[in-house]
Image (cartoon, rainbow, N blue to C red):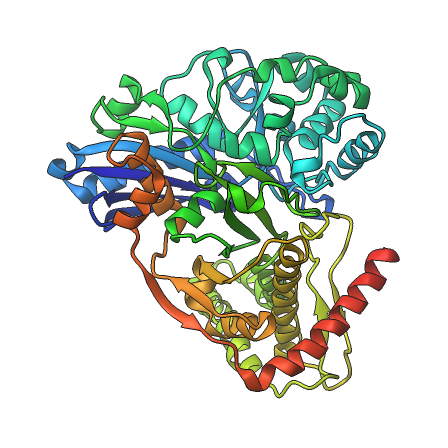
Length: 551
């Protein structure tokens, strides 16, 4: 018997599971909500600035794993052999030569620029565009394997933005590291950036690393964009490894703190959707769609089948970034669940004001919070009953910009076709439909570029808990959608990689076969609705073209 731990760092919380490597059963699970993030610290939504303090992550590691250790008991814990980590991305942080985040240094504790820059932080739109403009005139197209467009959600644009904005950061920064690479580093007791091992997932999809140019672009390329980037690429001369490999073993300090054996292997990290795709038992040419605040869409393909294809307008294709030995391709939507949450926040504004005004009345506050929690379920029930025609209210899903196809974070969401009969359920239905149209646009881009798509695998809370959303998506895309049984596919995928890194399995495919928990249900397209959604989708595309050209 052997067990592994999967650590999944999401936008709002970190989740940990202990999984049985023989069958994937979760013997313990724990969630820790980031306290500073929950308070809205270091963020400014109006300015698209979203930062996270490393202490939220450090405290989350300790809280969740200790809780899992307590749940599992001594016998199971003694047989834990590995830990692997996934995180949102690109979510990097500036560090000193020891690998210490700048916000953990004296005098920098409250500086947002010294913190993790969350994936959905779009403060570096200007910097991303400079990468795009510069690369147009470069002798080598360093954006070739990231869809041809660099995004403000990614590594180098974020680095340049904080360097330009903050002299204190410029003075103390030595290098920059993704969350999914930093957590394994600290768990293994890393004390020097020279010893840090980076994952091919983060390096290839966000950092412009590629085998074609033998690593990252040269220093001259970055200096030509801005001299402030001089030397940073030289600090990234670490091993670049797939997630089935090991960083090392857990440090004595962390083993003692967490109550784990000192023999626990720490795996190379990766982004959440990539490990989530493995946890959700991805198959070649299926879109594995991790549906949360945003979506991340993953496709894997045998190298021989797609070695001559370079898909434009996606978030990258990297050999071995999902399953070693296969090409991993990433796309996604910048807002999915976030779009629903935004609308719920809009219509709950009066409730929020009443909660603030009656803070001393606990019974009333509890009642109001309970009512507020029913908003999305009640909107869903009402939206399901709406009879849709070609003239029904519509929307465009760019409430947090557009990730793919063709990244453009300056774009905004649209709600159209409103009249005096439009109510909240009708607007909510339009937003749901728009997110499904955005999902179809991604599928179409893969197909147009020569990558066949056989179907969709739905992962995450929305896939499991919202039949309305999933059925709408199946009808819009006109493809079956298999929903995975696991509620924690990202953490489960991390546990699979941990088992592979620890030597329990020879490869990730073996881990998927042994630890995969199967599928909950399949949504088939309603044939009587497909033609109507086809007409509405064509109208969506026409409107989207207009708004994107006139933004």
